[in-house]
Amino acid sequence: MQPDARRDLSLAAGPANFSDGPEDLVLYAYDASRKAHPPEAVVRATDTAQVARVLAAATAHRVPVVPRGAGSGLTGGAIPVDGGVVLDLAGMNQIIKIDPADQVAVTQPGVVTADLQAAAEEKGLFYPPDPASVDFCTVGGNAAENAGGLRAVKYGVTRDYVLALTAVLPDGRIFRSGRPTMKSVVGYDLTRLIVGSEGTLAVITELTLRLLPKPEAKATVNALFSDLEQGAEAVRAVLMSGMVPTALEFIDRTSLKAVDSYIGLGLPPDTEAMVLIDLDGAPEVVAGQAGRLAKMLENSGGHSVQVALDPSQAAELWRARRAMGPAVFNLAPNKFNEDVAVPLGRLGEVLRAIEDIGHRRGLPIPTFGHAGDGNLHVNVMYDAAGGQSEAAQQAVTDVFAKVLAVGGTLSGEHGVGLSKLGYVGAEIDPVALELMHGLKKLFDPAGILNPHKAIPDPANL
Ligand SMILES: Cc1cc2nc3c(=O)[nH]c(=O)nc-3n(C[C@H](O)[C@H](O)[C@H](O)COP(=O)(O)OP(=O)(O)OC[C@H]3O[C@@H](n4cnc5c(N)ncnc54)[C@H](O)[C@@H]3O)c2cc1C
Image: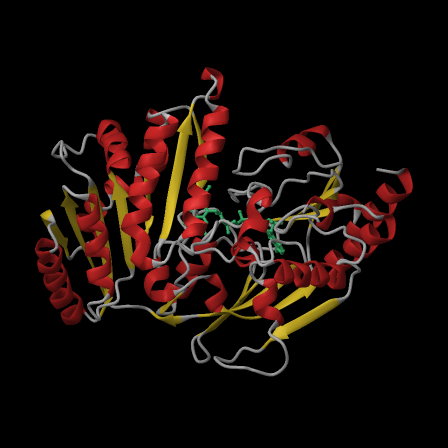
């Protein structure tokens, strides 16, 4: 970074919020994608006006700026691939208000999602988006990635809860979009555009988020299947039943084997799949629906069906799913973690195809996830030191080809970041991609905001 750029950025941030010390450059080189590239400086964001000053200085000096929440992104969105500045928003972590009458929360972007959930619950309210990273990710990062999570089947994703936001353009102009109302159709919907734009169009500095009344009761039901297709059919039967589960998770045989050897579930050896369902609502409704679901799973070929109506029993049923993250590393030391989503009717076919790809490439591919919205976490496990990297990359390409062939999408919730850039052209219509490049140019003519993320550079198409 040129000395005059460094000086102006430090002045804009306030010298106490600017660092180019070696320890910060190492710390801010990473996110949860395990990719890394060091920035040249780190700015700790304090308020909207300061973010505006920093972005204006960065545009003036053509210095790239990469917004960052908690760095829990799985696709490298917060990696400063061109160096420049990492803009750390985690310190802007105030919940400005929770308004039970309007059923909204107004927050800064660095609020940890679980903290917002807890604060809403204290007022009898409920913030539904629930990524598995909820204890450490931020609402700003969730908005930038349009994060999903376990409860998306019933409650949708982050985009469904962002009513309004304040954001800063790369040239330093501040704008508000949306209203704190349940409906608003005035003008183009910039709020929905910014949500999911992976920090490439504007930096979000305030969010108005929709809250719901807190559900009174919960129940969990799970079942094992000795046949994968029957498990996938059971998912469809539940979705067609008129009952709307909060979560509807599917765990395949390879995942179950890994978790069984990790925490000792004692599963029957012929187990091909587990289906795990959460319900919420009024206590009498939830208890009745849990009983109906248990019968439905049995009728679909499920066995060992269990129902939990209290939280400690439910936690026991969720034990296998929650241990899945670390358990898969029993299979191999490295993984490509994909989060494709497929049309609901093609779930069984895609699951079987992923098994076949695993056999063909000689790699375990444990697959589990939010089957209720067709969103599967496909974990291609491999041993880089053992020379399996190329086979693993080919397996990912095979999985993407199958997913796109059935009308699915490369990412249901983790975003494109850096990891999936090379595949975007296979999913997105060329004219739609041209429009996206036009939008990027409109918001960020100098190309300084989170460059080379989310959509491929036109030159690389
Ligand atoms: C164990 C684990 C489990 C996970 N489970 C889920 C899951 O169930 N569902 C799911 O959807 N994701 C999941 N994730 C992925 C990740 O937690 C989400 O993508 C999350 O939304 C990222 O939030 P963050 O604050 O860490 O953002 P970061 O990783 O810091 O940033 C993510 C992206 O958002 C941009 N960004 C961050 N803040 C802002 C801002 N204020 N303005 C503009 N752009 C910004 C960054 O530039 C980057 O492109 C998981 C990750 C881990 C490690």
